[in-house]
Length: 324
Image 1 (tube, rainbow, N blue to C red):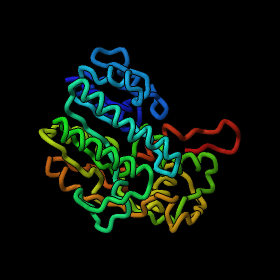
Image 2 (spheres, rainbow, N blue to C red):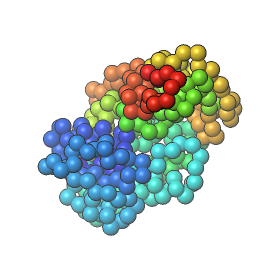
Image 3 (cartoon, helix red, strand yellow):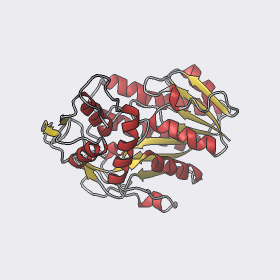
Image 4 (cartoon, rainbow, N blue to C red):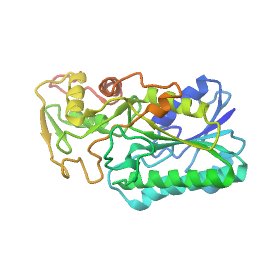
């Protein structure tokens, strides 16, 4: 079986590529390397059964060629920035990219897709843990809105053209190779100034965090059960953790002491406009398939911080001590 992974050189995508290659799939990756890094997949380049295509998913000619002869599409390519950015960029790199993929699938008679959506489609949910059938879906960011629009496109294509889809609404995914998110942000700030850490918002933002290895297992489980129609799954841990606690874990894992933590207050306690303050997903639907997270939110954050310390934390060459 041949799988196409869009965004396969990125954070989650490269871990999925690892899992697919180890499971014996033929894997083709398309990535423009704007967010992804070639070193994330370098171990597979040149090996039989692996192909890398550098380019943008919005390139219709290239994407149609990438989809050709594939049995399953894992669509992970997206603009990962949740904070308010250029709406045109979010639309192009999320919604339009999804449309191009679906049209390429239709042209090549490829009928199965797994799409990584986001918990941000729920907005400020009134029910927690939030189930997949929660309504109304009122995202409060352009990122969430574009993920929801992409979901709608996929569902429409499935209904019209007899495709099958698994849509996974992901919590905050953390771990090795990440280059976005609160843990990465904290490490970079502390690398610049190990005595002071600025935290966006009031530190009480509370969300579910999931280690990337657990996330990939969930993606594979959803794919293995992609039998008919459209299935939507929440994917996250079974608990939540606040930003204040995350700051403490990161500081501890970096071996720092006496760090002054400064809270900006943000927008009504949020880190920025569009930042969801509280999120916890009901994951019973995917648990019924036999998947469950191996780690709690706190464990996931700690393991991610430990791994990212090795990737992002650099010891200074000048005098003044070292950073562990």
